[in-house]
Each structure stands twice: as structure tokens, then as C-alpha cells.
Length: 384
Ligand code: HEM
Image 1 (cartoon, rainbow, N blue to C red):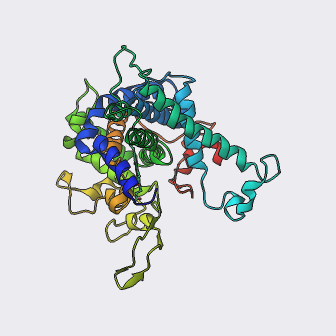
Image 2 (image 1 turned 60 degrees about the vertical axis):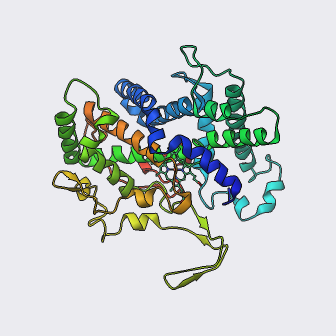
Image 3 (image 1 turned 45 degrees about the vertical axis):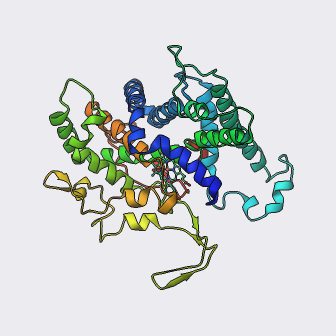
């Protein structure tokens, strides 16, 4: 969506539910889904990726649509996953149709035009999530398990629409549907999964870091309860791990492209209106001037005298994009990373995988070359 009054209306609608204080209202849902995550990990740690995805998707469905999802074979999760599959599949150059646009007129059964089937499925899923789930909320069909009315983001947005059937109310409903879908579609959920996966690689590769984090949790949280969002300020080492995970394996190494909307000059360069600008986020986050020995996972780089050192450039400055399009979900995302990372470290040890002879297989962080980048270890089988 280009910069325009229409985009601004969406951005405003989104922001009122995700600015820092608003994001706090989702903490109980985040905590609950983290507890389900722990149980799933305990039952079957080999399905880590699936558990991460389930945890995040179920919490976002609850927050946005007010729906409780089933633990298995849930219709909403299946559709959301389909939407994500579309987001994940995009790698520049993957589809010939990018270079040969006439291919889009060729029927799907012609060899080489199989992309049509994929695209149709993803489009169907996105429309279904956007329209069907939103209509259900609007019609009041969405109820919480205890029979109450949903206080979901979408229900609140719809509740604010003044009059039914006026032109402005149908526009407002369009915005509500788009905002709800945008909270999940495309790359946003993937960004959080990917950072969490990078964290698992880091912990398996740097046992000393893990031990220090666990010692901090033992001292601050203690053995008789799980960490809570309210512990966050007292856990500088955990916060440093989150910063380092965002920095070490950037999810969007080239962020998202921007386009200049007027002629401008920057640092002696003339940038004409309409220029596509691709930020090199990866380079910023691996700049040895800001982050010495950048390939090493080193949370200590963000600490001084046992506290967060505010003089070190915060990776969030780059990882969440730039300017007026900067990620509006960043506070929500960081809170979600915090509760998952702190809780998992408090109750589990994360170790590298073992081979068939029971020997440790050392692992390394290698990221995929997609727009949304992943630790290769966790690549979706469909995209290997
Ligand atoms: C670790 C997790 C996340 C990372 C690293 C991340 C990063 C980004 C980046 C780099 C952009 C592009 C900004 C730009 O154009 O300069 C973006 C946009 C966006 N993100 Fe996130 N994001 C994360 C999680 C989330 C979550 C959880 C949500 C929703 C709750 C979200 C919602 C959005 C939206 C709506 C946009 C589009 C903003 C616009 O175009 O105005 N993000 N994000």
C-alpha cells in the first residue's frame, strides 16, 4: 500500500492497538500461549518449529479475532498457515512469471505455469481469513470459550463503526479487515518465528550464554514460578539476548524496499522521486564499528556494569525498518520474544541435536536467502 491518506488510516487504526501501553493488554494471552508452548516442547521437542508456529499463530488469532483454536487440525490455523506459505514462498527470481509477465495468461495445467495453482490457493486463503473470519466477528458469531463477547482487536474496530450501511462505515469495515489480516499475513508472523528460531540456534551453539541467562533467571525469578512480563526490567541479560538475536540473524536482511516520493538529496547524493531504496539492514547489524566481532553471539556487548548499556546502538533501530513505515508491531513482537525466551530458558536446557550414534552435532547459524530469512536448520521442507 503506497503512502497515502488510505494508508494513514490503516496505520492509525493498527497503532491504537499496538502502541507500547496498548500492547500490554495482550500479555495474558502471550503468557498462556507460552505455557502451551512449554508443554508441547516437553511432550515432543523434535517438533520445535511446528510448536513455535502454533504458539504464535494461536496467540495472534486470539488477540486479533478473539478465537480460541483447537490444539490439532484447527481450521483457522490451517488457513493462516496457507496465507503464510504464500509469504514464505516469495524469493526474487523463483517464478518465471516475474520475468515473463505474459505467463500469467497461460492456464495452470500448462507445464511451467504451476505457479497459478499456488497463487490461487494463497489468494483464496488470504481472502478467507480477511473476509470470512472478519464477517464472523462482525456477526457476533465469535465467542470466547466462556461464552463472553470477544474483546478482540477486530471486534473493537468493528464496534467503533457508527452506522451500518453508510459509505464511511463500509470503508471503516474494509480498514478493520485489512488491519486484522495485516497483523498476521505476509512476513510479520514469520519475523517473530524466525527470531525465536535464531535464539534456539544461539543457545545450542553458545552454552555459556545459556548458563548465564539461567543464572539470572534463577536469581530474579526463583525456582517456584515462571517468568512474567513484569520481570523484564530486572532481567538485563535476557533483554541483551533478545537484542543479540535480532542483530545476529536479521529476519529481513534487506528490510522492505521503500520508494522516494519526491526529489531529495542525501549525503551529497541526488535521489530522484520514484527511486526504489533497499536498506542494507544486515550490514548495519554486522558493522564491526558498532558491534565488534559481529559474527559472534555476544549479549555482553549490550551490557555495562550488569545493566543495559544505552550507548550501544540498539539493533531494533535497524531490525524493525525505517521512517514512517517502521514496524508498528515492534513492541508486541519484543514482548512476545521476551516471554517465550525467558520462560523456555527458565525450565529447559537447549542443546545441539544428536546424531544416530548419540554424538552431538555442532550447528552453525546459516540464514536462508529469502526476503524473510530463516536459520537454514528450520527451513520449511516445502522450500528446501
Ligand atoms: C521480530 C519480529 C518483527 C520484525 C523483525 C519486524 C520487522 C518489520 C520490518 C523491517 C518492517 C518494514 C518496515 C519498513 O518498511 O521500513 C515491518 C513492517 C510491518 N510490521 Fe513488523 N516485524 C516484526 C513483527 C511484527 C508483528 C508481530 C506485527 C504485528 C502484530 C508486525 C506488523 C507490521 C506491519 C503492520 C508492518 C507494515 C507497516 C507499514 O507499512 O506501515 N510486525 N516489520
